[in-house]
Image 1 (cartoon, rainbow, N blue to C red):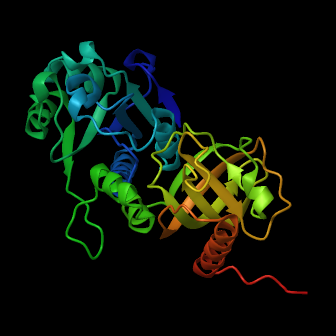
Image 2: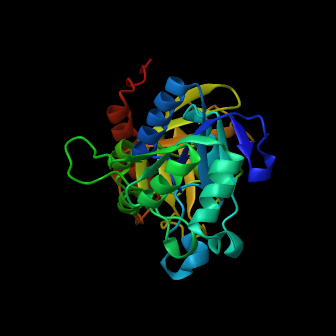
Length: 320
């Protein structure tokens, strides 16, 4: 996938495009439905698919007091867009200058002049241009004179629910630790990615070594607690079932920042330091607890690993 950071980078001969426009925070199941429609439209007319998005949430400039935490960083969003099978992404710098552009100017300079759009895909609540004056109806008016059509994509609802798929719903679920439902809304497992770093090595001393991720990650981390999931090692191309801890270790109270630690089940000998890994969350086991003794902590961890083993379908180890 080609990444453009400025409309001026798009070649004049890039060709006609089908452009999906939005924040696409988290690249959830609703966004993926938009991209699937874009691919269908592009195949029908022989055009390229492009996502037009922003380097930050526009609210961080327009209303910082109302701006929520991002589900993913812009670089992580680009990686997820690439996985969606798009031909290109245009990442616009959302600053005061872009916010001040009129809706007509945005549509003509970016969509028409730079991208040569044949089809624009937006959500029903999509707004653009100064003061949010641009609407899907205005886009259709512009398209009627500039040779493009507008598809308004209806809300996507998760099977068995009456709530539309949205980034705000994912944030609520992560805050509650419901990684199973959050994964369904995202259309992919809740995950965080980073390079394994050295920690206090307390897990190894307790008999349950862990791979520690950096405290600053590109993905919003779920609520403190214990989870079952897996660790994907991109360095070796392997994947392992894991029991995962998120929090500050209240039993010892010596971890100043929240940290993600993954214990690879039945692989106490594995060395992951410096490896690029993704930790995927499948099930929440419990909240974070401060234990009264070292023995109680070890018993609690052993119980967590046993429960994770059952949920993940990992056979019990051979006692021989």
